Length: 391
Image (cartoon, rainbow, N blue to C red; front, side, top):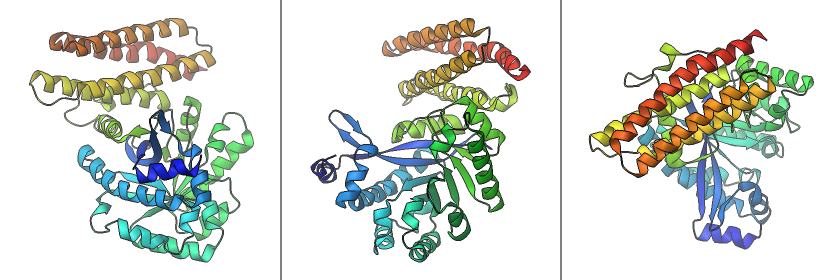
């Protein structure tokens, strides 16, 4: 991308941050997220793959990093306040910036270390950023740790210093590169490598995060092999901050005393990947129910926002489930897909009633959505998982 476009984005504040949730496989909660930069262009979002390399070559990356630091300070306060959650927010730092003599000073000038750390921060560094001057890198990382930052090694396994990273650097988290995760189902050697990474990290008391997780098979394998957190499109694409906050509120409050559906008292279909999909849908249904009640009482409501999340997440779940059924040659696939289509019709009716502001009919349709979900999960999905577990 031409440097003039990047300069325009800097001068006109055209950058924005999206947040991709990281699901904790032990708690089924969102406890972390990665901040990902975008440029808001008149024709749509420009992804970092289209401008980061050019920014590094021109030196503009340092100014972009500073913009990210400033926005993170604002966003982290907003996320903490609106979600009532103390999340760890990770963000990438370029190797170009990290190796600069004034890198730490840049952070110190932006982050207020007595206020901003009510929301925790984790700096993601690539192995490439660390190998040029190992002594200087360790010194900077030690200073970062004293300020309260957590440190993760991003894209772990594709550089040349992996074991050295584990041995010498003061790090908290290892993020296994997507290239390894993609190969879980196809390459026995890759599986052994990932098993070894997880084993070493456990011995060294490091958190392990799998990046780029996209399939039920990957989720199931990572859960069974004690990976700590998962990040990827299987659970959620990167979200703008408002949608991210709502997603966190829906997922993390599922088992609170105010929950309409309490997951751990009612459901388990013995497959972690789909069970968590169902759990998240139940969480969004809880929030939708809460907002409908607020609407009836004429309180400020976000029915549309939570319905949009529900509609999007149902699509994610149905697509993953239907593909998995076909791959498993499940004999009930056609009837299962037909049931999914019926639910999508109910969602469409619900959407139309929302636009017509028909409170009574909207609430009635919501009850139909809820009953469909419960019966489908307990009967049809349970039947499929019994078939799967018997194989």
